[in-house]
Length: 291
Image 1: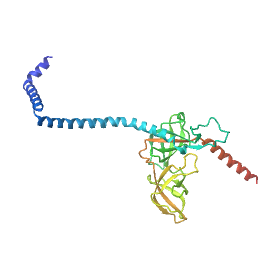
Image 2 (image 1 turned 60 degrees about the vertical axis):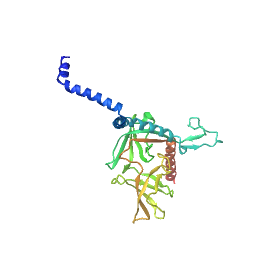
Image 3 (image 1 turned 90 degrees about the vertical axis):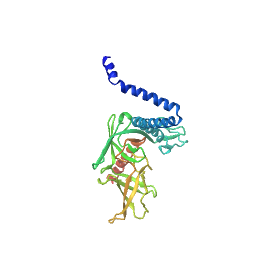
């Protein structure tokens, strides 16, 4: 307490000046309309500046949670899309009760789940990303993965209990069937391991009219991806001089360098379709061997 009194005594003149200055400013802004208006304007600008910066800081810390909320809402909306269902014949009495249906009697064939990207690579010739969902969240191998803007990312290739690894399109081992939206012509999509902003599409004959800007979609020959989903856009149309086909350069729809949230899509009939396909191949091969 003694130090406080010594401080006041030492700076008594300055403290008295501050008190008198505050009183003068109060009287000036209270009884002078012009100065009051100017003072309120300056105070408003200062207050607005600090409020703006406070809101920016607060918004930054709440942005991640807001993204998760919006992504969860998108997850629910994607599950309501019509192309996730197939209409069941009402005359068919042999319908399994365990198959999920909506209220209109349509059978669900695709199920979408949201996930967060934990890390991703883009600088290797075989690139992968890891998500925070695994078998405990009903994620399994060979499920398709799409970015938050609807662009194809890749497919799940390894699943743990709580995490999964996804092989992206930027992987020299990843080859899949896609199609040109305008013509419906199917081709093969791959990556040559060099330019991360361009994929290669082959199998399109020169008789087709292909232009820069044409849209490339997922095809009808994959069990992992729903058909008709966005893959990318044609950026260059090159002629393969050794054949009668084009070499198309495709800009992927997904931005692999900034992926944060993704959707994992499950084909509800994947196991049955894959098993039937494998059994068919074996059956045909056995008949061929007998001949």
